[in-house]
Length: 545
Ligand code: SF4
Image 1: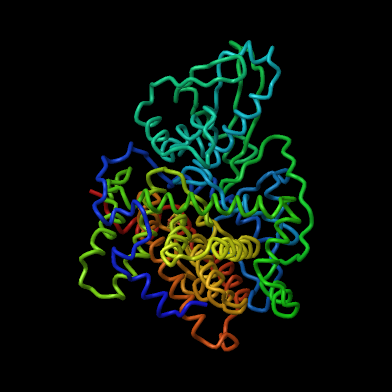
Image 2: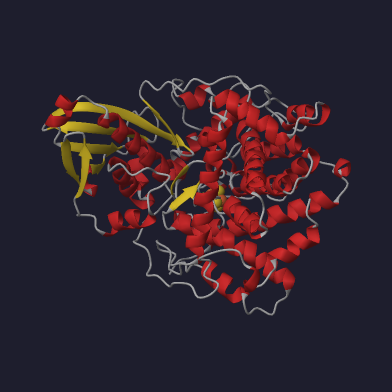
């Protein structure tokens, strides 16, 4: 493990030691404000979010001593979801989440309202591309209808431009931000898409904001159609079920294998790691291969792509200064923070913190711009892990260590998802930024070669320091306090690692399972106003002029 003081010292290094490119330190490119993206979560909090995946997953928690039966006095009653939805069925049993289900790449700012719809229309594009040629020859149009919350708040989330991009065959993970911006900036422009023998012209008007109320299978329902005049050649109903996950009518989950080392809680993991002395990355890799059926090479390639998208996002964010979309008129900060690092006289401690925080700002601001992010665990908290990865790159951390760190971070996210929630609408910001910071702390510890107890303690420390944090985004935009919280989440992750690696591991009084149980309990008892409704806290305290 590198000496901690060296780690800190390196992070505080001056420009000459900087290993990054395009960080903006040597003079950022000042770009015009991005195309406006009107975003609101106010209604979202009352509809979709109350029915989020996390609510369902809490039902599968094994009760621990720290948990007590509680009645959610203030939490809203979640509307019943169809028992047919896979997201409902999967709320039982050992953790079966895979890396590509967890680290999802796509456009921000909302995993359910932006990333999910783009994944849906890209899936539809791929399906229709496989239809028989005689059918495709007759095609005249592609249409998407948005229902429920997607229709009610979709304009604000950029659901239409994301849906159109997917329909045009742009993959969510690799779609250039400029392409998404251009779609929003030129709403009447026709875009050609070739499907087999047919080329169609599509515009944003082909994404139709349909009924907001009705008997929907899921609050985030949408249909996609391939038409020949008035005749429907092919149609499929989809659901953006939260966190970027998608399902469709008749959805059957991909066949999964059984994990070699099944676990639902950290205590079961501990048995394998400590008693059986299986290294954490090896255990998680083995499980991932068994559950997903992927090879080791495929898994590393995926994590390398995740890492690349994250670092690219941070670098892009560090090079852009703009007023972020929406009514807050929030000016981005990442580029200025980086630039000022060169000349600051505030000393090493300030340089270290500023550098890490600027990375969190950079990715959080990219999310606010609606650019490509990775859920880790959510879109709102998407700045934390990229900030960690970028700061690990600054330390010339070997690629394999970073891959192992991603595995450790995922394990923490899985545990929180399985035993509590990852949804701000269900558990407040502790469930998003708190979990992201906890994942980041585990990632740092694992990457530094720490043992399982230190990894677990670091994760616990970071999560503990976020317990009770509410979700109150101003004007419903994932900007204030979200972006700044990503910066804090990253800094706290480093702090948690520093504490955990310096203390005597066995003397830590609180274990990870206990803190996750506490988060679950706090989520259930949290006043509904503080669960992504924008009806409490900063969202009502701050008056926008
Ligand atoms: S306040 Fe936290 S939980 Fe709420 S939207 Fe922002 S990042 Fe997500």
